Length: 261
Image (tube, rainbow, N blue to C red):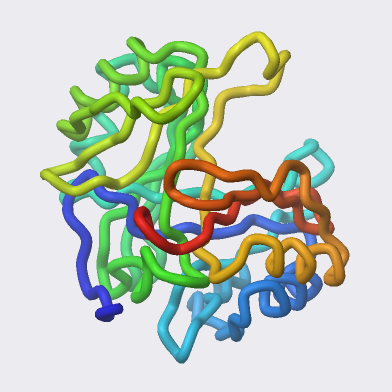
């Protein structure tokens, strides 16, 4: 797979994990995916590292501050949408009904980020590239290859993200429950799943998928490293998948690299 140096406006470009303990999180994910860890120079800011695969960045790792932990903030994976002008996108998102949860921040010379909540109550993140365009490797084994919105309101979510990023959607005829494929500038970038009553009071969220060679073998590595498999492996039209949880509680999914990755 070619090294990526840029991403289009409206395309997912980066994923990172906010953890309670960076060291133990690094040990877990390096064991599961064969990653290595590279400490980044944050110029005096909070510690931040990149997971790398053959020296190319694939994901990030940060730590939730003790103050935020006391407020109940839990470890979670976040996905970032690349934008050309983050201030303009944030302003437009607010006009469309979004709420800013973390205003635009300059991250040294890497770029700018902001966190928002869409009108349906789902958190999402933006990224405007500086020296860091995003993951050098994606859509391949042991890198992020799919991002999925689980929402209770298809129409509200579709209207918001179409207005904000110009996304298009097409139905997936192979799923038992309603599912939309998201396209950005002609490229498939993720999916949208309709949450049913079986989800209970689980909040809507953007989930991150990583491509793997074998889901069953990945499940074994997850469990031997102290994590657990919440669901699967199970078969889908694009190959086997599984939902995993790391020892600190962060949830991520894996899919056998193939049609999608």
